[in-house]
Length: 113
Image (cartoon, rainbow, N blue to C red):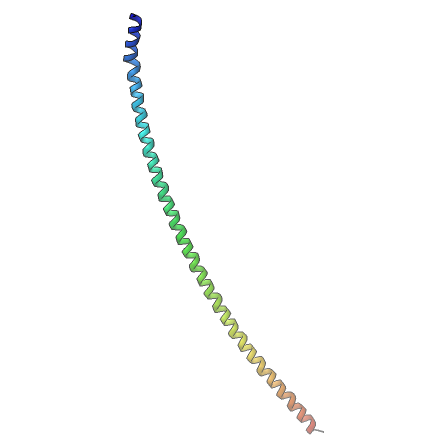
């Protein structure tokens, strides 16, 4: 039994303190890992908020840009309508002048005979 007692004593003196140290290191690593996880969660939330904010600003810029584009298109349409109306009026005037000229030519032709 003396050998068993010596082995037990040796185990108690050498291995048990080592196991306690390993357990302490394990707890420290676990705490550090937990802290790292929390930091990562916080960072991910911050990045998500930043991305959401950027997307919101981008959406606002696109909406504003589309509204400006719609305004420019409407303005262009109005200009085209005005120009078309002006050209139609000129054509109408030209057709009336031609009709009058044709009538005058017909009268001159009948007077000349």
